[in-house]
Image 1: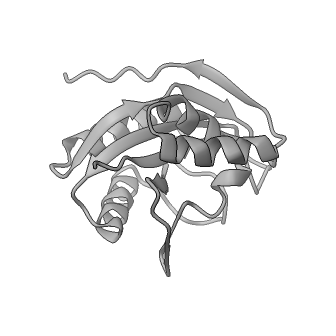
Image 2: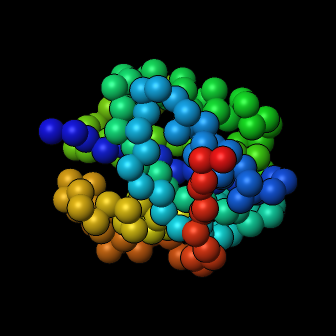
Length: 167
């Protein structure tokens, strides 16, 4: 059985929609990552450190032959390519790529926890993943259980679709 890996991608510095698109295109270009779905774009207020601009966020479903740590390294490479700087915890960023769900897997490694330890507290993760996980009962059940808890009271608005073309 092929497990889908769900990524949360967001940013609030510069042209965040262009950065989301660039991140998806970089993932699409990786030979060991296949994108199977991309959610709509959601605008959200910042989480954690609220004294910053609003974010644009998407979820992306992929399949991969990479190990979890190799996928994490690939995501960090995309962040570096798009000039991600880690200056302030939960602070502004050009782009942030996180592994949030990996089928039924539970990972607790020093550099990677799956499901993401804060996924259940973040509507900007849950709602985009819910949108693209409708045919994935393992992940959809996790997402819907988290949404039922209503831990995140922040606002979130669907603002459009991410248009990806292979120019």
